[in-house]
Length: 304
Image (cartoon, rainbow, N blue to C red; front, side, top):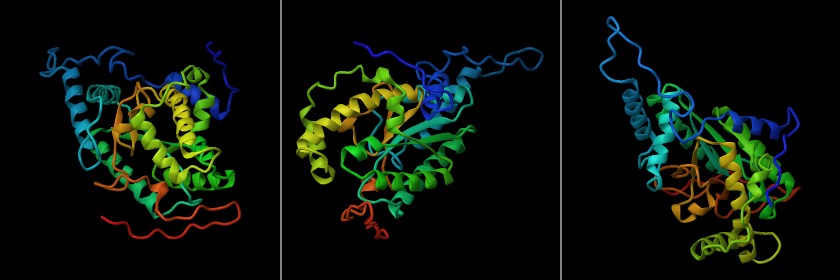
């Protein structure tokens, strides 16, 4: 049975997310809202030599090439046609190209050098896009507080770490929001089969990760299955909140089923070319911080 969709109280974070979802452009067609941009006659009423839509397409290809390179991507995009369609929409309406990505939490309760390096790496991609697209790019980090709670992190540690990441993101012109807020704003996202079996290869990968980081109830395998079910709801909430955006992930395509089905996925390196470990899990030997015991330490130099 479908759950009814209700409006959030005015002025609340949930209402803001719902407003963005209602007003954001979609990725279905670059011209579906207003039709194709019209050419302006020049030279006594004669049309320009190249149609405007051809110019848009050429610019969109240039914008796509600016970031879809091996300097940033770890794999080829799984749906290049949809990715180009999203880029074309942004170019056609002179809007920023929107990127959204999950930002998780590991053992640390404070930002470290690895986080800074990752944010700067994302910033370098934004700079590339801006050089090809006047409207530039807009980045939103979706802070996965739901995953942090699932893994057994204390609320104080979650709040402390995400506050530090938000501050660093803001300095770079990025936005942040919490995944729990997106899920609360999209009750229709719950209309999915969370009891569906997890594909064997995905379960194997998630269980291996849970063996390192899961500190919740039950076994690592239990944690992996619960994590998969959570993601089935969350990926729907993300695509509802961010239509017409590119979903960026530091994971590989093996975990494609965890990401929004209707959004193009860009598989990106995390800190630099050739390096894909998520920054929040570094250093690899970091000790978990407790409510009254911060064990964060300066990051060591990472191997090339």
